[in-house]
Image (cartoon, rainbow, N blue to C red; front, side):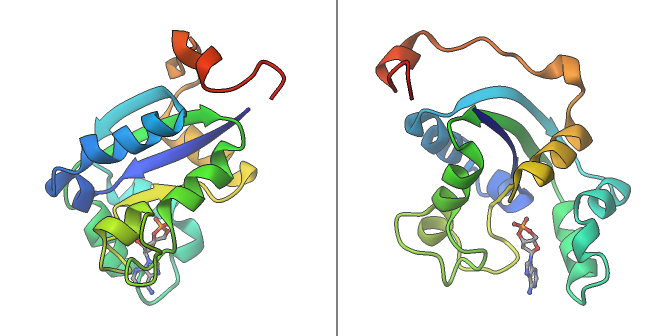
Length: 152
Ligand code: CMP
């Protein structure tokens, strides 16, 4: 099982796509194990996007990601990190394949609706930015036995 950090970004919140996107993750069989609505501060943005802080697009990215609330979620599931990244599609909504979240709802490189951790190391680092250890809820949905076999 893997955990991954998801942010439903300000464009997702403002366009009222939160329910639609969470529904896709639920339908796929991923478990929500933590979730909160928050407004990202410039300081948190700099931590979250540390690898992009020196890039020319960073000031615009920070202005965008702090502009309205985001929904932060921890999702858990088999190969969850790769599965979610596939569900999102390419970073640029114009390049993302139809059927992916960005391919279906985004026409932008910056306003691409959802962030998801790109590796196990990123997931550990990013989850710790948004959630305390005690905020993860480990209970499994009853229907899990209809989503995959015990030995998968
Ligand atoms: P995300 O997956 O959250 O990771 C970094 C974010 O920076 C990315 O989604 C986009 O929102 C944004 N981004 C990436 N490349 C660019 C770019 N060239 N110009 C503007 N924003 C970008």
